[in-house]
Structure formats: C-alpha cells, structure tokens
Length: 384
Image 1 (cartoon, rainbow, N blue to C red):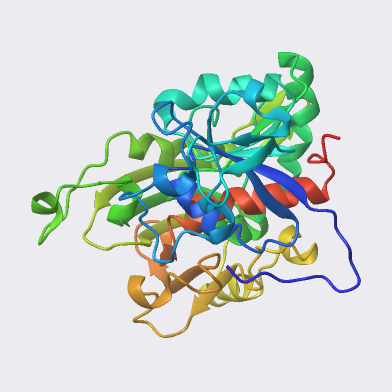
Image 2 (cartoon, rainbow, N blue to C red; image 1 turned 180 degrees about the horizontal axis):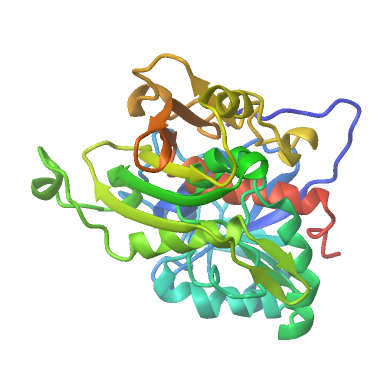
C-alpha cells in the first residue's frame, strides 16, 4: 500500500504484533503494513501448530497474497497467541534457522486476524495484559462497551474506551471494525443520514469468494453459480449499521432508529462486494442533493491526514454502468468506496449501487485505519 506522509512531522513508530498471522487476514495485515510510516511489525503469532517455526516456513504452501512474502518477516519466529510470550526483550531464536530466525518478542499493540472460534478468549487475554487490540473478528462487535468503528462514520465512538477499561478492569482495550459488507454500506449512507436522516434500508449483497476465507467456497459450488445464502451474514448486516450510525452514551451506545432488510449472496468474483441499496430519507431530498453530498464527502480521517485514508472516501460514478467490481474495487489502494446509479425508487424513495474491497476496506485495511485514528487520538502509545 502506498502511504501519505505528513510534511515536517516526525513520528516514533509503534511496534505491532499480529495475531493469526498465518491466516488470510493476517497475511493481508503483513502486506498492507509494509513501509507504514507509523507502525512496524515486530511480533507474529498464530496457532500452536505454527509456533516455533519461521514465518516463511509456517506459511509454506499457504501464502495466498499476490506479492511475495516481505523480506522483513520471512525469518521472524512465530509465537503462540499468548501475551505472556510478548514481553521478552531478549531475542527469541528458532532452532535450525539459517540466516536469521531471531526477533525481539515485544510490541505496543496488536492486530487480530484470528478466527472467531478462538478470538474471544485470546483477545480478552491481551486486553487484560495491557495491549490495545484492534480486531477484525466479530466476537466483541455487539458488546455495549466495545466501539465498532469506521473512522469516516463514527470516530467519536472511540471515547468509550476509558469506560470499557474501567468496567472490565482492563489496562488494555478492544476496538473492532465491522463486517465487510457493512463498511461500504454505512460509508455510502453516512452523508445522507447526516443531512436528511434515514428510516429504512433494503440491501442486497453480491459478495466475492475471498470473503469466505481460504479455501473458501468449493469450486463446483461457485463456478457458473450464485449461492443465495451466507451463514450468519444477514443478521450482521441488519444490526451492525445501527450501532455505527447510532449515538454514544456514557455507558454504551444508542442504536440508530433504522429498519434494515438484507439479502446476502455469494458470487463468483475474487474480491469486491457489490451492493444494491434502496433507502428512505426522513426529510425530503432530491437526487442531485444526495449526489452532491457524496461527491464532497470527507470526514475526520481526511482532515487528520491519516496515512491509509483515501482522499475521496466516496467516489461517485456518473457513468451509469459503474461501479463494476473488477474495474473499481482497487480505487485508492482499495480504501475508497465507489457509488453509482443513484436514482429515485418507487417503493423506498432512492436506490443506488455501492462497491467496496472486502479484504482491504472491509477487513485488514479497515483495522489499520482504525489504529491510525486511535494513535492520533492518543489511545495507542508506546508501552515503554
């Protein structure tokens, strides 16, 4: 990923650990964090089966990114996802490793790309041990004291972190990013809601196979086919926007008063979730007014010049045949959401097409942008 560098600003880099580093989300974290101006990877952790190996060996035959394994992590030792192993200031060596295999097991905060089946207890352990946990998993998204954040939509929700720490008696904290469909949905809806209010949303998703992880969907199921069901997906898409678009209180969140109906489908595209969205506004609005809002939408990440923030978080296409998945998913390093075909709808009022890159803007890239926001707001700091 190419990063923006702020002029005349020296920032001491924070040391980063990645939980679930051998999985597809963990791999994406590693790729996107290369040459990051604020963060550097110092610890990699995964399952017991991978622990004790160099990273290169641990992902042998399982590296699924379209670039080579970065040289900076090839010889790093893989640890277990246990915070007690993350406080060593002596080099940890891998037996038999040649030309490297040694690394300080220390970091200031962690990204979590863990599978949901194991993430809950592991993330809790790291938060209790004093780490900021920036999570891509679903486990804590619905908790009343855990912020679910899209920086362009609800950056103020980070202010509940001190309450979370006090309530749970944690010296660290957990912050989550949403489901990969929810991110582009709420980004497209946000400027409209701020100006006119939103009462109803109907969304149909056409979700890429990479959203199923690896190995994902069997080829004979997805080739020449559309699968009209993704287990557990629709409830997330119907609930998570209510928290993101809702209000923050001293001891939790008030959900937005919006009715959402979602239908989620798996389609044979590699990356990029395409959504068709219909919605009702609470105040009278015109198509031209909404287009103007979208074309000019900027938020706190753009004002703060966060390194991963797209210059145009929403890119509106005037060409009525756009956005298209293959042609538009990588806009601004995959961090920009594309919108098009905004028009009147005879049932709900308005309808449009929305596209977001699911593994970047909807997953690892979203978590990195969250970390940048938290760093600038003072929630992430060097632990020493």
